[in-house]
Amino acid sequence: MSNSSPLGHLGRRDVLRAGGITAAALAAGPGLAACSRTEPSEGQSLLESLREKGSIKAAINNEPPFGYIDDNGELTGEAPELLRAIAKEMGIDEIEAETVSWDGLIPGLKAGRFDVVAAGMYITPERCKEVAFAEPDYKVLEAFMVEKGNPLGLETYHSVAENPDVTIAVLNASVEQNYAEGAGVKKNQMTLGDNAVQMLDLLENGRVDAVGLSTFSLNYQMEQRGMQDGYEVTEGFTPVVDGEEVKPAGGFAFRKKDKELLDEFNKVLADFKESGRLTEIGKEFGFDETAHPGDLTTEELCSAENG
Image 1: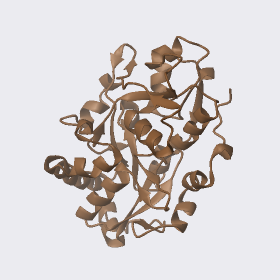
Image 2 (image 1 turned 180 degrees about the vertical axis):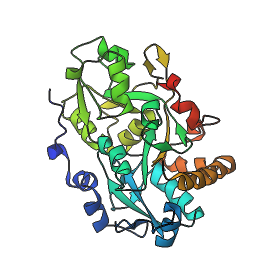
Image 3 (image 1 turned 45 degrees about the vertical axis):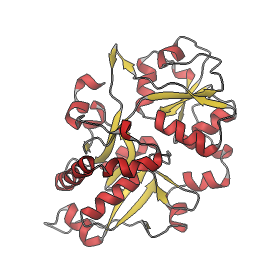
């Protein structure tokens, strides 16, 4: 089984979604600005530059409900909508967007292609070494999408590892890939995808037996794609790596040098958590009260004990 993620199985609408910023910008509404990058002037912070420019550039990964381009070419999802609301409170009126493969998000951020990753990225110790995360804005469980009735009895990544004939699609450079490898899933059992659209196409075309993602992502996409008759989402579970449970929770990623931007973002996010606006924004995408991260902190999630 190949680890490629062919676009040949995608419909026209999904090719538009997966095609990046050029396709998205063609149908952009008022919430999606044309993409350009303005470097801060000498002595000017990034936050000051973004306020002056009036927009912030974000990277998404085309994974509903976290961040994606909808059928009308509009940027939406839990992370972009939350970013849009927080940015306005910070004096930044618009969001520019670029669709990026999962393994290109952190390298692109560090290279200055965009100002923030708004893709529902899990906060892990490994990623914390590379970028600076805002405080978490959601927590979630892991799950699989499988054929109706779950004929292979897949419940956790360990159950995938126990059957060498089982194949599963996970995002390249994702926590799901780490969870699978940590549970003993062999490389030849995994297909590494660039985005969720491609992985679900692989499942529907019989190329893999399961897709591993968050419960929110899988339930939302199953409903949106009308897959309920032939497929189901397994019961959510907490991943175990090296005998220890991890905490799947995520948020926005920034460059470490952009501390002023991060601090201001966290101030507004804290207000949203306390006022209930965080849940209000997320509900449209399935992020109800159970998704609220509570008192989980980035410091805790970045610790070695969380993965």
